[in-house]
Length: 409
Ligand code: NIG
Ligand code: FE
Image 1 (spheres, rainbow, N blue to C red):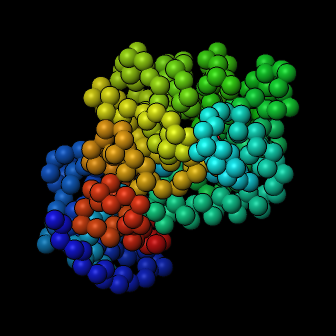
Image 2: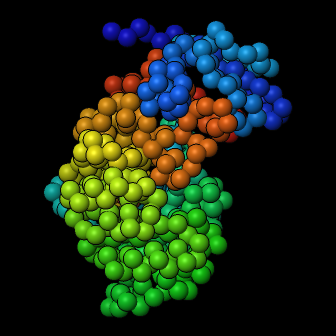
Image 3: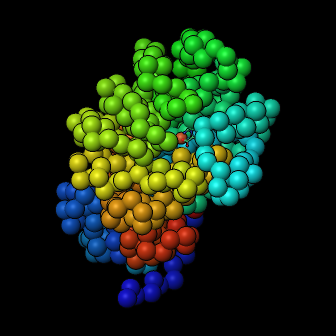
């Protein structure tokens, strides 16, 4: 049995001049660094009885608590666990409206289909900029309280030149990881002429959206875009300086995963229906497989097989896919618990995938780890070990969050 965790020591409010002050968080029972050269030498680089030192927005030191250098401030973690802030590399947070009825119908037996996206498109088009921004910040605050310090988010519920561009503008006010998803589904305005919609997505809409985005995405699926359309869209995006990521193999087998590897996409997302050739392709390239178990939970679908991917040597990320249709959760701890319970991951693997894996899916080396030089994004758990994220599912264990060296929760 695990010993009870001592009551947390009150944590001093953060200094305004974090650029000039240093803070040591000491008495950490288990520190996940994700640096295999540290601690126990595992992929988690786990240090027991640890401390971490923050200066400005960076980590400057990690090691045994008894050896922590002198600092301006000291925070006693009270024998609790610290890990890197979660990196949620896949969400759809610029939207309006609600799809409770659709979820209810699904839980009564109706199947999920890509068509439900149209409901959110109508609500999003009708919303003001201020309403969309308020909705986005609401879900971001919710995610932050659950330990998410970096998130990616997408357009895809506007599907006109103006509505896609404004979604990206609004998203870019909150994150650098912004993805143009004009190719979420064929716009209802082009239902009779999908080719004309692909021309819009790769032409005028791309020109309007590229300045606001880092990534381009496409939903490669029956009822959305086929492999040839997806290739044309991603190739056009690449020519405009956007880097690809793909919604691939979610609802059925298809060409998305192999296309992702062919185009060196940073990530193939969902990966629920994979052939051996798909797994081999992922293992041979640099494309991360991002698994989104909230979607399988909320659509009562078959789980993606994380074990199969990990055993093949594929880099796996876990992410929420937070959106009002297929996965209305902002909780990375929930995704970790599902990954462990239903997808064959060990707790260590799931925690790595929700932190370092997400960073890899965004091709970032400054986040998802806690080693000197990394951004000081930390999550403090009200538990003695990161394993509790899976062991105590549904319990709000996140009790402190630092983002860029500033305590925000
Ligand atoms: O990732 N798969 C495509 N897009 C979302 C679903 C969006 C929706 O249903 O509104 C997803 O699951
Ligand atoms: Fe998605």
